[in-house]
Image (cartoon, rainbow, N blue to C red; front, side, top):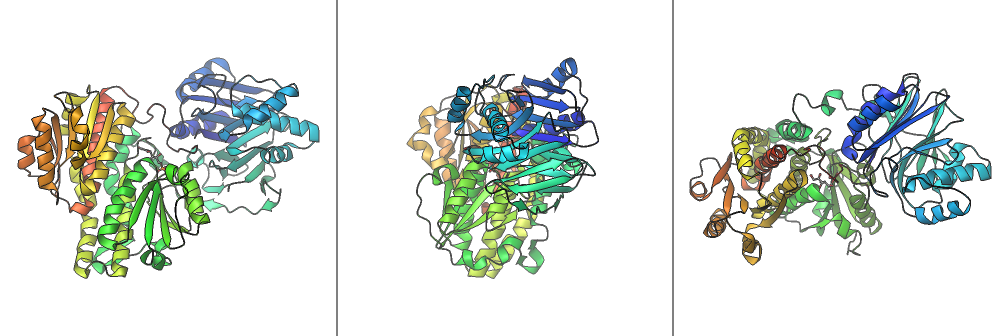
Length: 615
Ligand code: F6R
């Protein structure tokens, strides 16, 4: 994880680096640091804490001149988050300065060797080991920085996106990538490097996304040279035109990115199906799917791999695919799948779901599935991300940048994409009638309106949040399509409020969790109109009999659950198979308001990072 940013050009680097770090802070916020070079002196400031703490330290401690700069916001892997372990790191001579996102797995043996050769280390990080390995190679082999980086990277095992410069070369920075993302922005006589394109979007629309095992030497007057790390061969890089705009990455009047992203859902769900779903004409057309429909319809099985919230979207998809397309589906945690010697063949289709498109476990699961002959389809949000490039084909969710660490709009847009895929396959297979198919298309088109309706409950949800904000535990229950929503509701609460919460299939409650219920225990039950409605009502009775506090998500106009529940959150009537897109809304708002009332950092919850590029 970690966010890295660098600049070399004709402007003062510090404002660009600082602003870039603020935009990348979603990737990690344990500590931050910056190094600036004006051709004479390197200025460095580092601190435990957030980018705002760094900004305060810089103002007190260092001069900010220099047209070359690098900055880092850290999610700790090796070494506790403190000032010393923060990046950047100097090499022993003080000539080389590095920032790094990733893990060098064999750092301990390299460190030992370097210590034998007289090197000393200030920090506990693997990164300081890497920069000294580069220095040692540069000296010993008498090579230039780029060559030393290439030799060093062939000796390390692990993942990295690195940016470094040499005091003796004020017009050059060197970058390299394996497993962690790295974009190079190409401006007019200036260059930017960053973990994603957000730090440089107001300066240039042209970017190169380095591929794994590539490095680049960026020289002020000479431009960018990309090479393969393995054999030093030159690569002709593809310069991509970015579609991002500044508005998308700002809060737009909301107090938090999470709230903005919750409220964006009606419009981003529309963006997700725009041009792909033509309900009146009975058409679903997904660019990435068209050439591969037969792979899906002939598949003996679809295996969905993902992590966290994306895994929950996969669980919803399992219900939808099996119901409509009648293809067996298995949903796997990518982290388990990759180490399980799974049985996969070329008759399987694997769908990898990932908002960031960078999740290390999901990426490893994709590689394994491809090795074993499966066709791998990606459902990603971040355009140009590693997973979107590693998969055989795929569909973007078009949710726009999701910056709040807790996923909201990614979840609903992933479900929207997966629903479209399922419907398209069902039509091609003939596993649903034409009239049902047409009905579902029209229903999907109505979802943004229904989500807007659901958002209107916010004031009432705030009141419920005030009642339960001090609870120590929560239980979330749902059945069928809404079981994954219960899991997702519980995850949202734990992530941002640090209250322990469990999601369960409602009927499983009696097999264990019912023992937890007493008058202190809030139980959130998704009890919308569905095939399971009466069963869920019985579950609610069971909770009530044990004096649990019931907060129910109900269909507008419901009377039966309303009678039983202590509090209700109403959502508009929605067809059951599409209901997760709507029932998840009050649960997102409930977590948001509880976390806010508890004074938690909603957008940057402790210990988490937006893009999990370590296993
Ligand atoms: C939860 C959350 C995480 C991610 C998970 C997968 O709010 O954000 O659980 O869903 O880390 O991330 P992606 O979807 O980027 O692969």
